[in-house]
Length: 186
Image 1: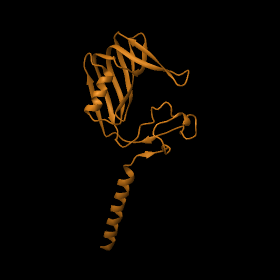
Image 2: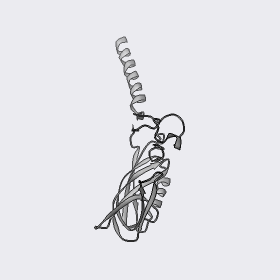
Image 3: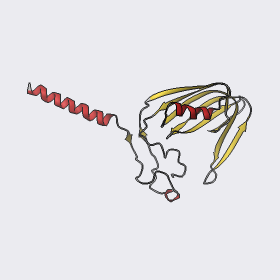
Image 4: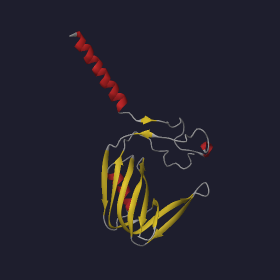
């Protein structure tokens, strides 16, 4: 009987250890201690890891549909508020637009400059991806009119023609995505 009780205690300890360690976020190259936002004094220094990665899981998946004449960026921002999304991955997006506005980054100088493309013509949405970082939408879009394709950062005045569907994977609120799109953290 004492032997069974000892096995029960070992089993309970095992479950406790698994519960504590098995569900925690694993960071393979943690952020250095200190400031949350990068400044020029860390550009090109060893304090910024060459590769920063971590693992996490989706809490849930949200699918958002936009109707005719809906501004996609504003609609995404509204969906973030409605669903109380803090951190997420924009997994995919499809549909069509009758006008689009994107910007790409001219990487010939630092700081980089934005190059804008604004067209009022129909196009298929071939991809939408990006992140929601602390409630802020950072989305990219690719559109094609059958002859040419253009893509970049999603800007206001990209408006739906037939429909648009975007799938969002929600992440835990307690992870930090702050540095992922910080172009000065180099």
